[in-house]
Length: 456
Image 1 (cartoon, rainbow, N blue to C red):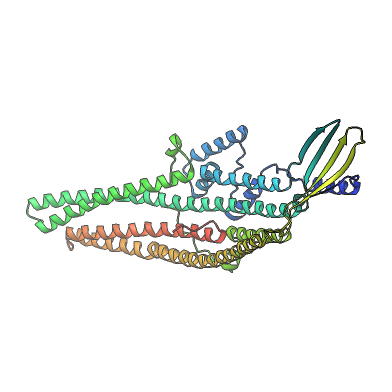
Image 2 (cartoon, rainbow, N blue to C red):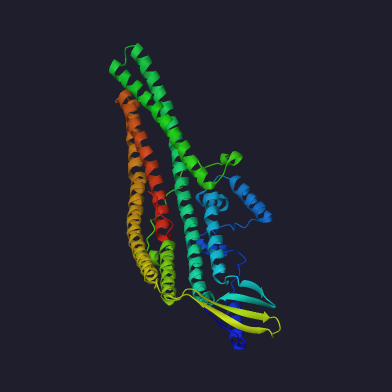
């Protein structure tokens, strides 16, 4: 440390003041939520509701929620409701405030220090006053601001990723819940038909027109139908509860209505040109990983710049003694790199940077693989669902009609008629499952393209 009791140069004061004023960062009016909403809108066609704690906005959100719940939910309205109402998403959006605060803090200097000393001896009194400023923090402020600015942009991408992921999970849960309810309703019809056939078998057995073996088969079929109905009802309840959790509804709101059946298949499956390239250019997790690598590279540059000097303070001093004129000057405090030359900090920064680069590469590899996998699953699910719709179900219906004609003409037995009915029920269940799998595959493909995660 060294002190100078000469007047402080005005140019230095003016330069320091200009840097301070130009480096000051302020909070954004929306906290980055508008950018998150835009990113989400571009990828799923629906924005994220601004999560500002304003009473007027909360009332408007509640009104939108009630409007959506007043009608039977569609896949789009379910996603809209989740984006409006999900506490989990609101918690994720709160991370934006943390990142923005760190960005703003990076544009502010450490508070100056003030010291006051008074020494009295014999007939003389000495008073010393000083104000200390963090010079190294001032010099590195622009770099730190750029680093935290990139991290703030990365936080926006991560928040948008959470929103897109929530949308994908909600769509999958919606289609699963509708299919489960449809299967439960169909299982109830199967149970009623099995009960009727079992009662018919009992009556025919009593009059000697039905064997004990055939009667036991019908009873077993009825027992299986009762079991399947119980299982289907539980699966419908579990699927609905999963959707309820994603929607963030409770109390009277959880009595929302779902349609009776899944949407029809589209006329043709979607064909995406250059799917991998498009995914790498628009996937939010890939963009966030790139931002992280850029911010880490900037941090590495800052670490190299401050390798030898990371504490450099300057102070204005004012000293007065009894019987002597007041003396003004400045004081410089500099940390000497005698024991710590910054090699460990530099090595750590380089390792973190390489870690970030490799994570970015890993994210890109996984993104390309997920797109290929989900694209294949989407087309396969469409082909299977269309095959059930166009071939299996119509063929089963044709067989049933023919057997019914034979039964009416006394060319087929009651056992053959009931056996065929069971086979037809199985094909209908398969068609419902295939249709559900297609819509889930479609949601997974959109998630893979946009980087909102892929849930199996």
